[in-house]
Image (cartoon, rainbow, N blue to C red; front, side, top):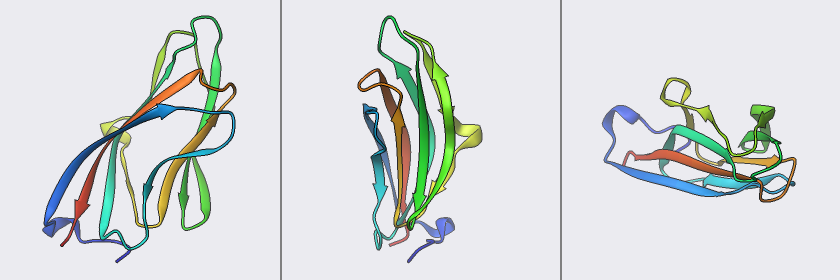
Length: 121
């Protein structure tokens, strides 16, 4: 099932995913093929944990092998955070899709993704 009916969901699971960017494109979260769910992405916050240097990043959705940028080369100042996705701009991650990204410097940026996993059975 690639696109579950979210009106009649059987269960909703809250989830938070966090980690650190690297300088190569890395997958942060996956909704596997045949998961029977759609993932509602509520927020993505990116924080610069380097105390001295700015860093930029990309956020990418991969849907069945096709990449789409959510954010492209956005700078986060040193010791600052940026809300890349909020409740007003949230989106659904369908089956066989991932969220990933890369930064200009290894381990300078961290991310937190808040989401809901909606299952129709």
